[in-house]
Amino acid sequence: MLLNLNKKSFLSMIFMSAMVTVLTAQDYPLQIYADIENDRRIGLHHPKQVEELLSMQIANNRLQKNVQGYRIRIFSQSGQAARGKAYAVKDDFLNSFPGQRAYEQYNEPNFQIFVGDFRTKTNALYLLKQIVRKYPSAFIVNSSININ
Image 1 (cartoon, rainbow, N blue to C red):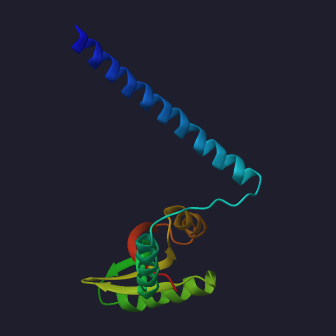
Image 2 (cartoon, helix red, strand yellow):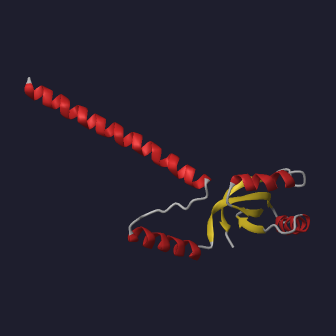
Image 3 (cartoon, rainbow, N blue to C red):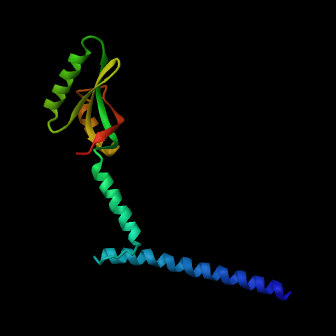
């Protein structure tokens, strides 16, 4: 009987310790939010290795020229006159939407024109809504995009 009482007491102490930890942890984010609202600085303490890994990741990101994102395909056609039509559509787009980028691509047997370099689909949708009147078959595609 004494052995069972000790097990119960031990389990009760573990449960109480866990509850105190949970309750204390819940107050911590609230304090952070209060500090942010009062424009106080929040310090983060981490091992030096974390800082080194973060610096390596930043350096690696700066070397990359392309990332995954979205473009809008406004033209795709095959045939003898497709190349000329593709270049005409590209020139027309660049004149109609200055400041946007356009890319021609040949994916056998189609000549295609893609426009934009968007990190998010929401940004691509914004341009799509503007160009869909002029290019009714336009749609968003996943693509490797330029980040420069």
